[in-house]
Image (cartoon, rainbow, N blue to C red):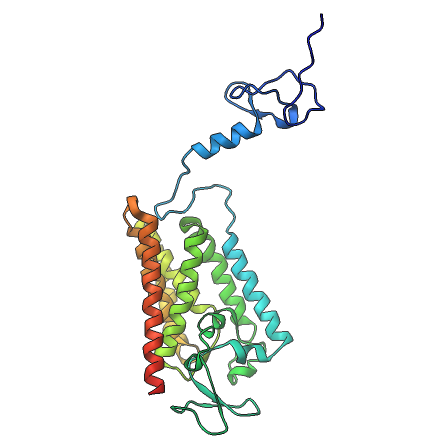
Length: 307
């Protein structure tokens, strides 16, 4: 008497005589996954992967040989899209640039802020509740002709240099930190740069990802020290960033650079030295506390400006 044909539990139309070595259900070639002995079904393979503890870096990032720096690429794409928006709508820069306090007239002319405003002029900037500028300015860059910023000679090179630095630093830092920690580092560094601009030079109009990039440079330095790497090349790299910050102070926002650098260093120190048993909780708490301090500084500065 001929035995009844057995069929794949996921694809009943397939006749098969191979069963999963774990659950013993019959599986067709499409459902077979190689195992140390025999084959396993798709569901058993997934269950086995969930039960295996995934390796982590010293900072909590997931260890993977094929990890794609998704956040780095996404941030580059956002900066490029924002730049295209500037080209299409030139008023984008004035609307979303980091501006602490200023006055505008009916024709869009910019003037120095006066406490309490001035008849016939509108108050603009963070001082008027436009807090979004603290982050949106970090995704904008100088227009090709520099028209919104006097006669600055950078033009499109501004975004090119920043995106090149983000591409180089972001891939390395994101690999160690993981996507969520890396994104928090980037945004907090950008915020820290804008906050220092607001504290020191509230009348300035600032754009660029430089503050966040300087934060990544500081993170790269802290990561290298934490991992015990040869620091000679790393020290030279960071020294180059610091020299650039000093030389560019005459025509760029050193406040944004320094604020991003200090904030990025602070965030990564928390990441690097959080105790292993409570690493995620301590890292999250550190980021929240730092964000709260930055917000408090903005509130205090706004109070001082508005009397």
